Amino acid sequence: MNNSKLHSPTDHSPIDSSVTGNSLTDDNPLTEIVALIPAAGIGSRMKSDCPKQYLQVAGKTILEHTLAALLAHPRIQRIIVALNPADTQFNQLAIASDPRVTAVIGGEERADSVLAGLNYVSGLPTDRAIWVLVHDAARPCLHRDDLDNLLRLIEQGTDSPDVCGGLLASPVRDTMKRMLMKPMISPPVKEPSSIRYPTMIAHTVDRNGLWHALTPQLFPLPLLRDCLIKALAEKACITDESSALEYCGYHPVLVNGRADNIKVTQPEDLALAEFYLSRKSKESIL
Image 1 (spheres, rainbow, N blue to C red):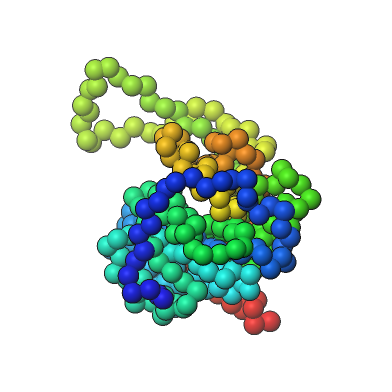
Image 2 (cartoon, one colour):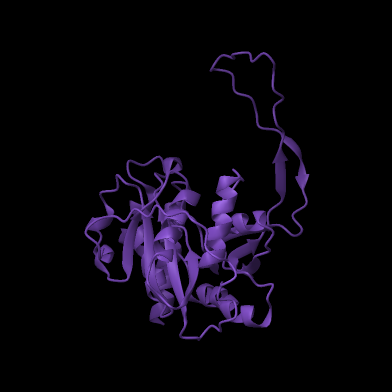
């Protein structure tokens, strides 16, 4: 890491969203792309002693694979990693000393970590329009062609003012079921812990038009920061960066991405990630 300590940005004042950089072409030298990795989570669903981003797969930590995929792209000049204040592992990674990588203190929720990174980036001296590429720390299998397709949104914004940014996504292929919600009993009745109720289906959801939201997600810095600040202040349900823009009335673009861009969430995902990373490595040699 190129800083001796974590940065702790605190300025949450809004930025004028009228300057978003949408009019700049993809190869315009006045456009800068900054990647932002929220990595402050503990990954409780992995049932591991360490956060999932530090688990080993294919010879490296998941986070190292994730950062390496982004650093390999010539248009990404800087990566901001938002860490848990108690993180002691990041500085031990060789990739942390790369001058393009900077760590900041993240927050309790993903949105808080993203906002911390945005605040840091907004304070950097620059005369270029910045687009922020937010990517999950636990998505190590990102392919260059997916990244190229997403970054073309910057150029497309020149031809269409409606393009505010977008995200990688994949159409839902499986049959989707809505769970039957158990009715609330009032007053609540404490049931024996030995009782296990089956999860039942309420109905089948029409999958037509449904997409799985993936990352990276790409938006102009001022626009994303303003929308995130507004959504958090109004206690909206924000599960990814796109949902913050949607809350503010914008319509991000869905960019069809590869299905192997998986997020390592469950223990069984490790073997699948290792397979995809091994195949990706062989493809790069050919």
